[in-house]
Length: 279
Ligand code: 13P
Image 1 (cartoon, protein in one colour):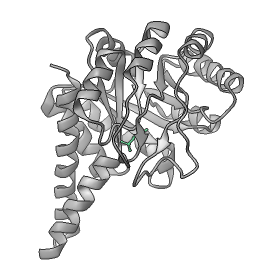
Image 2 (cartoon, rainbow, N blue to C red; image 1 turned 45 degrees about the vertical axis):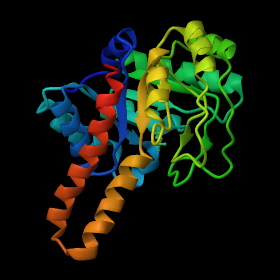
Image 3 (cartoon, protein in one colour; image 1 turned 90 degrees about the horizontal axis):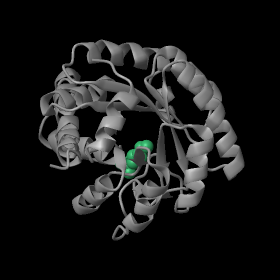
Image 4 (cartoon, rainbow, N blue to C red; image 1 turned 135 degrees about the horizontal axis):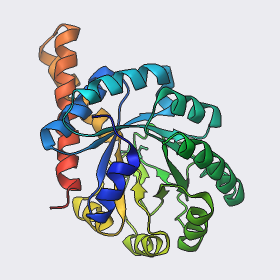
């Protein structure tokens, strides 16, 4: 079923679980994410990055997701990931996305706050949920989203409380030491900062940079307010390494390769869904 972000995130936040938010770029990645959710008996967030608008336009992404979601027994939310463009956000709302992420994290605090509040006004009037971000993540290895200039800046708990109160945002992405891409060294995830943010804001928190994060750190984050976890790089890396291995010995028809790739997407997504249930 096609669902809204708040319907699944608030429930997960109360139960100390997280909903996986998996980036997709084409039909096989989307289908792999939705099938993994269905087979695991858990909702999923099919996260379409504004970065991938050259792969697919918003209307097509919405039609495709709604169609597949309606055939699934599990809730599926279509989410717009990392958009700093208000124009793209409004187009995504009109296309039928269930949630949008306005990413003003590179802007001064007051500007990020004002823009996020504006987005919340429009999105909430249309029944669409909003995620925003405070603080910045560094870029790891093979990052497809971060850039070499990205420097880590942890989220300030007091600023987070002010931001959430004044914007009315539904979920807040925080910077606590995860990176976009694979870690270059040992991850240092600041669960102490996360605890303070959670106590200060009391709304579902979002962890970007899920790929490669140690399992015990992920579980500690879920216990302290993280209710949505984003995974992108690991899906791509896993599918590409299996594809390269296969092509050493076989030369399949593209239709056959596409099905295998959907299966590899499911392997990664199912692994994370199991972990995020925090059982
Ligand atoms: P990774 O690529 O590190 O998994 O991060 C994904 C992400 O945060 C998408 O917004």
